[in-house]
Length: 221
Image (cartoon, rainbow, N blue to C red):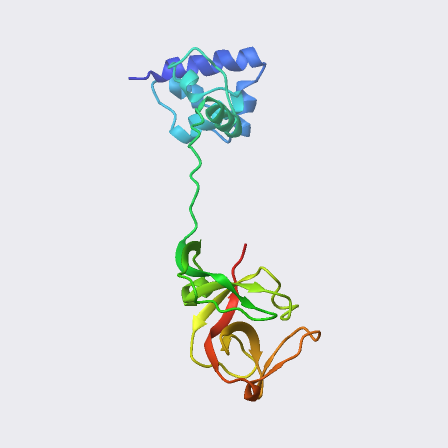
């Protein structure tokens, strides 16, 4: 049980040490001028009044209540800073988030952007690639050989192909032409080379022309 007269005595002594007039303090805090007198008679201060006095005297409420001999008063931000300094920092091991992947068949024989190759002479290799909207749509991959499809496709690019027996004009596909495979753009009656240094292929001059699939993108490195 805390005795109000003891609290009043501590307030009086601390004010004296700090050179603070009790009358001035009570007026500035808008407290009754008889506050301390009433405390000596057994009337305990309300919590908010006690808090205002502790702030004014720059001491802790615990000191005024006699619960500690340390009159040190800290501003809230100083208390927070002290708590942060005392709080141990636990470093959690960084976890590497593995990006989603998908497996696609890759044909070692490339589709020619030049003289032509047949891509299905060998069994495909299964390769792990990043999973995205393009790779999920693709059915297989193969490498571009030659530069007749520059600037869109360069020699060595790995393209993603969606199987389809036909594509629309303006789309790019993988074509079987008389035993060889080409990557070309579908034109009106011809297969177009994007590089003007290479001729287009007139479909009517070919004995066997088939579409293996539509090129839907390039595999990101």
